[in-house]
Length: 465
Image (tube, rainbow, N blue to C red; front, side, top):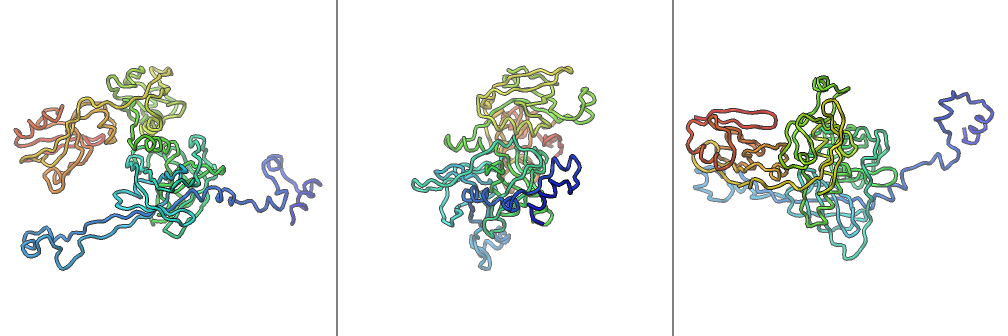
């Protein structure tokens, strides 16, 4: 049945459609309309999506190589001719965002890489330098030298304009089969419960994303970048229609950092809070759960100077609804330093606006990073004084003073004890730990050691005799 025949039936009233159906359903009016395609969008965007290959040398060591008996015979050589090292390859995708050769990909694609190669859509290969790699956002910026050539790029869209149901295309190189385009819709927004990175507000899509797509482009129907494909939820390793992309709002700060010497400087708000659960919402008189209940406000922080108090509920940040602390951290991270942000607060049942100027987190007190040594259970732990800048680097949400573990040396008492980076040494033999100097003094004098460590929301205690 041709489209012209259908139109004549409509005009004659022979196709009976209800009023709602007649308004929302449109019969194709031409042969061209029957051939609607995403091909023009793909032609526009695909040249700006690249393949990223990374290689790193991994030193392979037999368990026998550390055995004193075998070392007497083999020395530093690997027993039985085992290879000393092997090459580990990683495959991913990337997006050209600057015509001079700046490419954004995922941190996990180039993590610890010794060599990175970028292959353009026209199959030309370039060695790439890593300008920035940021584990906290799972983003990295690469640079290739193109000797004055202007490469195709993608325009960055405002990911905040996305709505659930919008059609998107995912472009990348799944499983190394070659550049591939898949289509789907936005299935969800502001997914903060996905533990991929520290700043969590992911775009969820059902456009098929598979291994190798990481770092590729998620584009809208205008051919603009709305996200960087980064992860899938899968029980088999393949796509089951639940993929996640980093919003373009978080890509912009990484590009700004690349343009300013590669140093990432994230703004500081200076609050610690908790999500407003159904029980808290009822107690606070809120119609539904949502927002962040402020537990702590750092002295002299932007929040303190802007009038934010303990007990306030942060409902909105610059006009965006805040559902939980992860969403608040994401919003802060998208803004540049020294920008004024508007916070909508709920205080004593009334809404009010606080204006805060986001600043650089201070190094106060000095972190005094120290490796603990001696005969005690904390030996081998690298610790430092908490301060806002150190908190930011470690991804901690805290405004209190104390001592934090930043690194654990292998095969040391602290490693065997189970300490982890990010743990806060809370107390030792009943003494609250204020700084590194106090911890050094107490750990040398104490026997046995009754230790309490704060890990996230938990306080863990152990006694070592």
